[in-house]
Length: 400
Ligand code: NDP
Image (tube, rainbow, N blue to C red; front, side):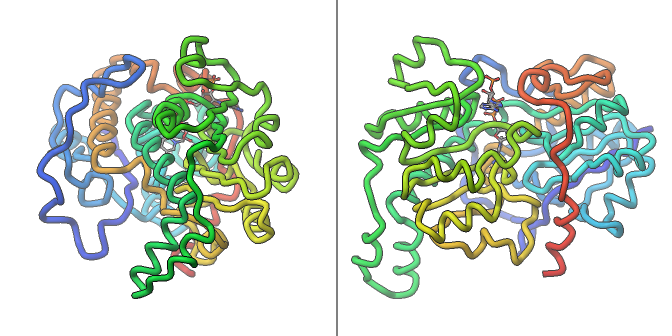
């Protein structure tokens, strides 16, 4: 029988909810590219409930225990005294969400002698050392498309919030003020702006589609060009090199995966290519940006604003400079874990587990690594190597 370690974020500080703001979730029939929603044989949770925190258990306990497996659920994931570290030695499967990632480094993989599969309940498996998974014949899978639209909505929200100076204006209300001039001295319309995305995959393209009605000029950079019909429909300008796009845009949003090729692609040198007063929205991965270069650019005015929900490491230490830098609109990593998204990736995780235990193939669109090589969607979107360096910093969260 297998031991499954499920790493989830903590329950709300005032306890696991007894009631919810809404009674149900809107129904969607499939994803924009024709991919089907997750298809587990059954689910043991009510869609619309909190599944991604410890008490929600991704709705997996009944299923796994009915097969005789052991399920360990914990939020304790960093440092040598963590529950994850203690349970790893005989774990067969480790599951975590990118919002609260179980950093599966080469050292941890070496300790986990029985480990066969690492599942990302969400999208983005950069918290796993993919090279170590390849070398140790460990399957890595994620739930492709489960929260792409959730993130795209967050990106659009953040672009508009930054450009219109929403958060500081809201804060004046909470403080009891009516300081119109303070609010509008940094407030613009997005209409007429040039907005570009690095990567036009599931999220990037959904962002472009959602921005089109705002009367903006849309740009993108991607390794592969979109079909001509899509470029025409959305009026897109394609840039072969992302560095060529930066100077043409008022707002740049990052929507590419983190892998060794993209790590720190926004740095002191590349920031010089941006227009003065540009905005960056990054909901892809914190490490796409050099942390301190972003702070410097906001302080100097080279950037007018920076927003996103991804940090490195996660959780971000209490003294992470992005918490206090000027003109930011950061949230914790939440864009892909709305209650709507949770119900999809909980079902997708269940589907992956059903395939694994029934010895059926996992969908190609969910596979990142299998049989000692990048596989499925991973072979297309990821590169070999490791992007987990520095993750031990996450252990500092509790001490600050
Ligand atoms: P997709 O795989 O659909 O899209 C990724 C796109 O990035 C592809 O079009 C790919 O190009 C392109 N790409 C890869 N490398 C580069 C590069 N070096 N330069 C330019 N483009 C590149 O993934 P999603 O859109 O679903 O997700 C994107 C990322 O967003 C994820 O990897 C994850 O890190 C992050 N994410 C964040 C979430 C959150 O909660 N904040 C939730 C979900 C995802 P091509 O395929 O043409 O080669």
